[in-house]
Image (tube, rainbow, N blue to C red; front, side, top):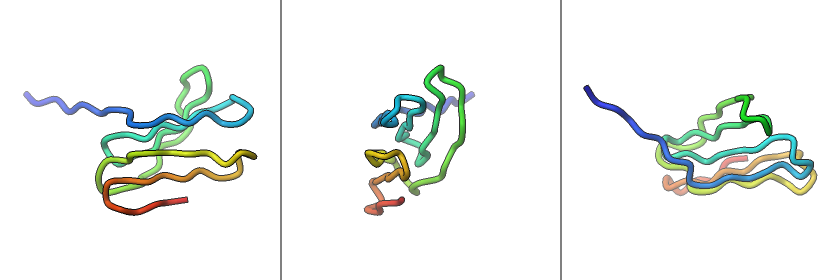
Length: 72
């Protein structure tokens, strides 16, 4: 029986502090309400997502991964 672990590699908090984004080792960016309730999961990379950032006005999210791509 195998288990797969996922690691958060980066976390960004929205400017108003209402939600946060995590960059994960499975190529996904996950969005959560501040209480931990999942909002959405986005496929960002084919490999680890190394970093995630939120615009100062909260209007966009950027992710960069080990596949050498940046996604908005």
